Length: 440
Image (cartoon, rainbow, N blue to C red; front, side):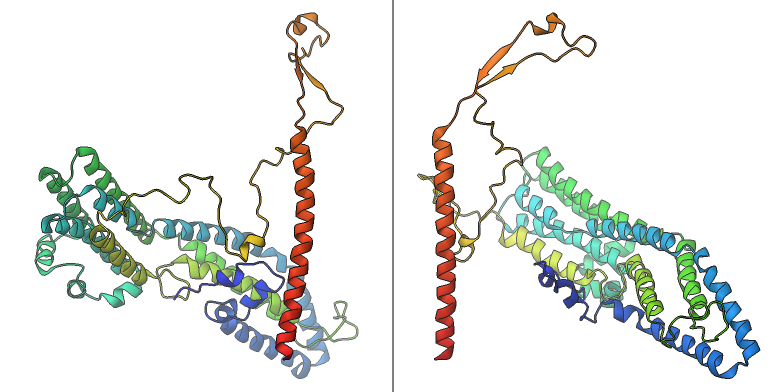
């Protein structure tokens, strides 16, 4: 299930993001813990051998090896490779979510333009929407393991109600080597054409509106299939994985603490435990794990797309739109602000919070009081700024002072000051009252 933490970060506070560090599902800790423990074990084994099993001459040789690898560790451009790879994967992930397929517009346009309250009209609307959702089920069955586990065979799709038995017979009549995702869409488009011939759709334009939404829905699913068929070239994930793991395998040697007194690269402080290297491991390995989890968002990771939930949402909401929600607008009446100026209302708690005026940043700039008029002249010539030909038209605009506006601003500021004082007094009074109530 996708990890939702939006409410926890809805308000920015010093401890907001620190609270996310305590979560386990979908966290960085869960993704790197196995590799980190293995790296610690390897590091400890090498450290114990260096400290206990080697003689002084072997230790000197080992220290030269450590220095050699440590000086050349920057040869692996880890930042560049990881940064570019994660950017590509995140952009791909974002686009896949944008085209994953929400059926709302298909349902709304079908309910709007396929008219009629009879059983035939109702069947047209419901079947157009169901065929579109059937195509999404067929696509998700082939690219998502979650959906494949839910619908292992076409018979399970029939049992779930997305396809009727006679429709499966029609579906099975077409046998060829490629997928048949297009067939339910063809059924849906044929129904729109038939509805137009029977007068359930009142004009050709309305039919085009419905078919355009069906085509948009189909195009999104087609692109999802394309992205599944043609992933990021396998050399790139291989290269990044190899670079990260090789880097930290080398770190097992290059980050050892040197304890020999006469070594040129002797460590200033022998801490035994590689604190900074462990932090670097968490950051870089976690960075790679983010890309790994997002590389195929139709898998079964904690933060992969909930395809089954989307199918349930689409079929439920779509049928509700075209059936129970069809042609049931409320009675038209006068709104509450018909005869008076509109004044937005807030709850009593939020009404005390000042709201921005949503004006331009320079809209409140005023001319100084000593400016009485403004001279409007043509643009000066760069070659001859004093040329008299450019001074043929001059306009003098008097500056009109709005005294009532200035007085209103001064009185408003005084009102705001007194209002702030009043709110502070009320707040302190309510706090003291709560304290007294708690004491009693």
